[in-house]
Image 1 (cartoon, rainbow, N blue to C red):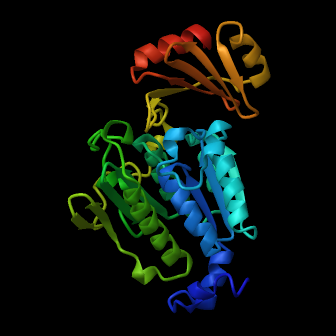
Image 2 (image 1 turned 90 degrees about the vertical axis):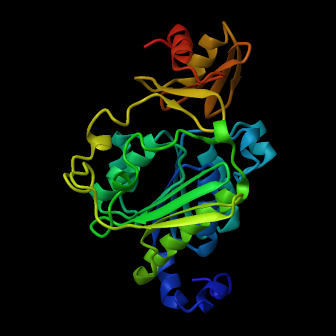
Image 3 (image 1 turned 45 degrees about the vertical axis):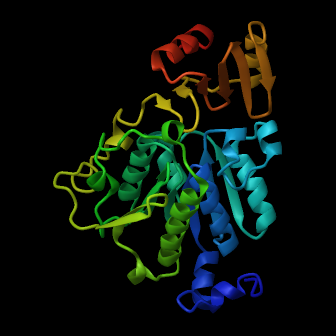
Length: 337
């Protein structure tokens, strides 16, 4: 352990040397490397968590730079996958931390492998479909889950512990959200910083065996309106299909397999049945569109304002619309089944 690097953290008595050693031996899964995920990863790497596994499906764009703190203009110009760009930056910040980067969408099929060996899952996502997959995995595999959400000037966070607290679906059932995203309502960066910092604080409490200091509430606030609210995490919801009947619908059923409108821009994501050979698809789409080809993705301008972005794992982003039917039409015309 580097005594000088972590000296101020070790001086904080609830952590101390024992707690720092526990952090060095810990492993954290961060799902989503956008606004929340970058702040979370930055704090954890600087705190000396031994292993960070980052999973993200997207690439860096200029609109990310306002709030996604690990990225630069060069990352955006190179269209680097966020997980790759994050790993590059984090490795320079603290070379003693092992950082894994996974450029992929989070689906039920991958969750068992992604959660293997991790001590905590931290939510850095922008949609509830993925959060419910995380929630199901958390309670199925008995791994605590640090939830966070930020939109406009509002933030919300909670720390869920299987067997000790209710789960996310007990507190926010399917369809209970207000539908706002950063694409429709915007978001200011200080909200992101606060939510992510609260998420990390609870994670550090757990990892350093300070479990008695955990908040045990759903905490929400509005920085612009200067309001805050705390709701105690009490009893699970009767017949909750995650933490009570243990059906885990987002892992075992079709619930999580939906087309998704991505936060922050007019984009619909689809899942192709097979992985893409990027070289082959660059040649194919190059016959009908202007194509940009990187080692990680292909971006093809189909019509004015409509772009297709193909990733090697079989995902396709249709950019330039939030209309699923319109996006599906472009997908079917140029990608097929």
